[in-house]
Image (cartoon, rainbow, N blue to C red; front, side, top):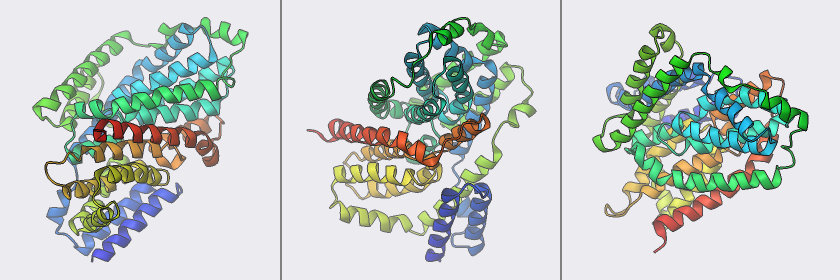
Length: 425
């Protein structure tokens, strides 16, 4: 039965990663049903593998995302930045990239991209800037910003929930690395892409005539949503000390936000992407069965032997290995698969040894690896689809040509950061 689980696992991951022509949720459901049908693990035991904390976090962030999107906040931010920089193409692009990174950290990288991509296309058209490079950079910075907090990316939710990492721990340990990488990436944009983002005089005059306040259709709605959003953020920070489940906080906060904004709850709940929720739940079943059959024990033993039990070598293997896999596999199923593996590796070290660097290496590796390929994250693919709707085709090779230098430089900086912070004596 162990080998049957291995076959189901490999086939499922190949089908959901190597093509977008099939329904990924359907493939995962088939795989999960096969696992249950084979009765490899008792169903009651297997059902406990579904992490409700992650499910609740995803549901909450989807509802909050839809409500924030209705306020026009992101449109207001983009227009304000363009006016602040007086229509300068390069400065406007860099400002929007920073805004995307911050919003992804506070909110959600995927939802932030979905809301910012149409705005970025409009800004690029007004300022006569190249659209495709702008959108690719937008995806890279959204992925990077999302890595800094527990709720910024679905992968973080998975890693944080499965490993018991709090909201503040992500900020303390991952945010400094992401900030350093982000600053370096902005320098790369200015040095190597600065000439691409030059706006004409007429374009500058046109953007200066734009009125940011027109982007906000309902100011009372915005105020209520922001107030509840701040309270949710405060509750997440406090949860680091009270040990409250972030998923419960997010879902409860999302419902309160919907009520405070006087929205019909039936409409609010319809904004939840239920196929994505089922997709994640099915993956938990498949990975849980593999974990309970001891599949990760064997891989962990091999990695221990390969690195000779050296924690730094294991951290670097985790960082670069996760990045390599993330360039070919969607980062959500990858996070679900690798988190228990890292847990097995950590348990092999002495109890008094701090193995948390392995978790931070996993988060940074998955994030930076997803910048190499369009297949690396759901956010990348969402950006591509939105671009195609506006007649801008972004191919796999074009994305990789832009993303690879950023990913490699980010991985080198992350390697140095992990060494200096956790291993340099």
